[in-house]
Structure formats: C-alpha cells, structure tokens
Image (cartoon, rainbow over all chains, first blue to last red; front, side):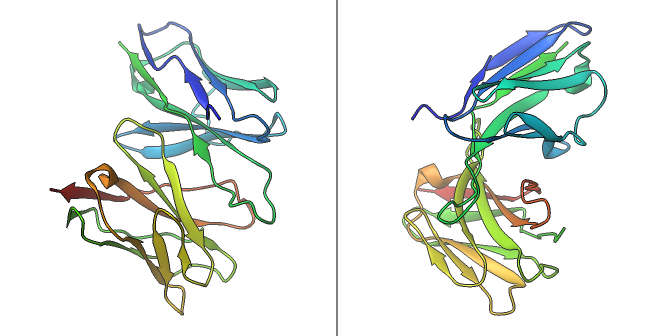
Length: 117
Length: 111
C-alpha cells in the first residue's frame, strides 16, 4: 500500500501566484481531509470530504482557498492568489469507512511544504 | 468538544518506558480518546485509541482512569525513533471527523 500521496513535497512561489496542491488518498478510503500546520496555529482542519462531497469547509481561511475532489482517487487544494501568510505545511489525510472493526484512524500523507515569498 | 491538557515536553531514556499523561476532565461518556504522534517532517501517525477499557497494540498501551478524566500513553521500551510530538485527542461523536490537534507533548528519547 503506497499510502496517501501528496505533491509537490515542496513549493516556493511568489506572492500573487496560484498554488495547486495535490493528493491521492488510499484506495478504498471514502473520507479525505486537508489540514494546514503552522508553528503559530498547529494543525488545523481546512476541509473534509466524504464520498467526494465536501461536508465541512468551515476551516477554509478565505475565498482565496478552494478544494475539489473530482473522483475518489484525487483531490486538489488551490490558493489563488497566494500570500506570504499562507506559508505552511499542508497535509492530506484519508480514512476508510467507519464501523465495527475499523479504528477510524486517519492516514496522513507526508505533506506539502509551501513557502510564499 | 472536550479539551485535553498535556505537558509541553518530556525526556525519556532509551530502553525505558515512557509514560505520557493527558487530562480530559470534560470528556463525555461516549467520546473516545485517541493518540497520534508526529515525527519531525512527517505527517501525524495513529497510535491507539480507547473508550473505557485499557488498550494495547504493537506500538503502545493506553491506560484510561475509571472516571475517564485522564489517560496515560505508555511506550514500553522507548527508542530514539520514538522522538516525536504526541497528541492526545478526544474525538466528538456528533462530528466524528473533527480531530482537534492541540500542542501535544514533545517527547525526546535520549541515548
């Protein structure tokens, strides 16, 4: 099992540019999460998808952020335009169907480190 | 959502047991206690979870007090690779997807 795959691992861009982060969840998992981690705020949930449908996007900072999940094996997080304060590590995580015998654990990717200059 | 309180840091000698405390005095009757850890430059990793009974798996043991107001994660034989930030999380039932990661405990295992 390859685990949750994120790309790019590192991104350096200039303020105002569009940034697209990508995630491939574990095959068979029906829930997908985007988190952001900074020193100041720790790990924050940005958005949660279930069966490709956004269920809770209350953590998305503002309209500059958008996330999509066109199918069960792919999701994107887009920032347009990017700002220096968006610099952070962005994690994608997936989870299988909750239920008996399922721990409900989240499987995290390695993260995408974004630096906006 | 129930909040958790953990010490900010702790040291442990390699080969010894590491006991990580967590207070969750406002936990509701059906809320689970979850533990994750995050090794430097990696994504968080699930360790263990429990409701009322003590739990053990290949990574750790979880001891939950009878009143459920606190718990202890035990790493039985800490290794240098166990150096990480450990998060104690109470998972709400209504929105079971919301795992709120606090500051955690930074555990440093020393040779």
